Length: 121
Image: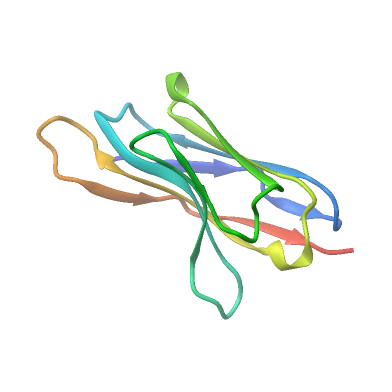
């Protein structure tokens, strides 16, 4: 069982910045992808930014140039630096990890509990 613990959400004014963190509770044998999704009220959950198994990054068009995903492999942690925040970035942000915890384990899809980001003046 892998748990993802998120932190860093909060209230910020338009144009401000926040940094989200997501730490996995254990080492993972093979990570297929790890990153961030968000869900705004009344909308479906959408991809924000993610690392792929090849080490590439994918970003939603709406956050390109403003958000940056990074990681610390030694700490099993990913970060999301969010700059130039807009009211439309308001959402619950979820960390996701898809991978195989051990060499014999099945592929799992783990989600964090979510952290609320509110962009408002």
